[in-house]
Amino acid sequence: MLEMLGLYPQWYVPGIGTAWVMGIIGTIHVLASHTSVGAAWLFALLAQKSVSENKPEIMVYLKKYGMFLLVFSYIIGSITGPGIWYSVTVASPRGISGLIHNFVWLWASEWVFFFVEVLGVYAMVYLIGKIDNKTYLKLAWSFAVASWATMILIVPILSFMMWPGNDHWYNTGSTFDAAFNLNFFAHLGIRTAFMFAVAGAVGGIIAATLKDRETRIEITRFLSKMGLAGMFLMLVMFMWYTATLPPTARLIMETQMMPKYGSTLGALLIATLLYFLLTAWKPMQLRQSIAVVMTLAIGLFGLWPEERSRESMRKPYVAGQYIYSNQFFSRDVPGKGVLSDMPLIEAKGVLATHYFVPDDLRKITPENQLRAGELLTKVMCANCHSVGPKGALRPLPAMFGFSTEPKMIQAYLDGALYYGKVPYMPRMPLPEDERAAIAVYIAALSAGQSSVVTANVSAQSSNPSHTKGVN
Image 1 (cartoon, one colour):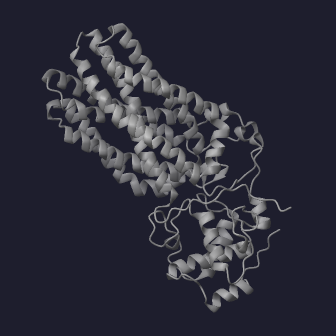
Image 2 (tube, rainbow, N blue to C red; image 1 turned 90 degrees about the vertical axis):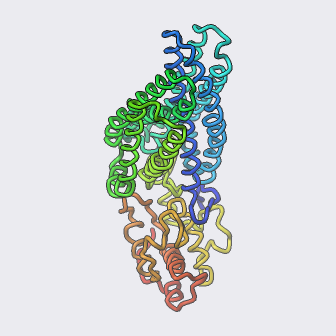
Image 3 (cartoon, rainbow, N blue to C red; image 1 turned 180 degrees about the vertical axis):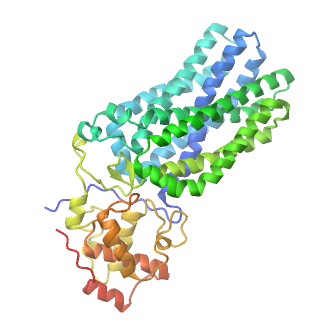
């Protein structure tokens, strides 16, 4: 019986690709979730200030902010959270499976703390003025700790997605080796810093509506100091974070991400610092519209590029530097009983060993070559590239200069990708006929054709120009 690849059906999203679907949902979720964690600490600190300085007017602000938070973070966050689970499960089933097999108990623990956090925010809002101060402060600090615990337990998973940090985990398969990797503490630090900064910005939306002048000034300045502290800590953590990245991630960041997003992130950093400095100096100048614009700017020009950059810097992997973005296992992982897919696809190809390939495409013929090329291209490339020539996510035809010459395209497949010489691209040791089919399909996309009937294609199908053998 022919050995088969353990792959799943392909989820293909025309135009924007699956990565953008996950990225859009993820950006909204991160903004909501990080605001909730930062706001939990803001609640605890302001509640402590209210009680210790006998300023009950601060509690008025906390109740208004809490009501806003229930909608902004806990409803939006609760909707986008399952959205992330759905999108990553269908877009990257092996990736999410690998994470679950490593971190199932970590995720279970995070859900317990999240349950406490949700109860905490309702208690914080609806028990203001109804219980004694000592009990309320206990609730406030329990809410803050539980909220931050959800971040502490999720960051190891996100850090492992970048890389395990060393080769030890591949042999042990240990959750602790995977969780407390080289990237963990720096990653936790940068997200903690961001939660303070974004909570300060979002908090201004409510602070600007306060009627009492003295309370408004005091809380706005408190938010500004919190935001400035978060921004300073974020800069320090970013330098540490970049030092803990794998070499391929640093290469991608330096050559592709920073030239593309560096100016945008730099401008946002300056704008955010000026915003917090201005509101600290002239707190009565804060307007709700300004705070809303600042929050949206952080999401659109800060979080979106950051999330896209982090996703891109992981390439060619989606998790642990052993699962490629296109779902193939790139290496053996003895600690998890995982075997590399590379020997099988090199020996038998994808069409013959993928469960969900139609029977009429198992073997490439001149008649089905274009269809086979389309299927192979989507399986091998669509997780990171738009297949169409006008797609939003690194369109494949553009990567080859919109060439209509299959031989030129196949030369790249035969060389750099066959041997895995491009640091941010998966190795693709496909058989000769499958590489030729992909090349023909990409050339047809560039030509704007729905089929290829030229003599050149027929000649390639019957008499391949390349002679690389597959053992």
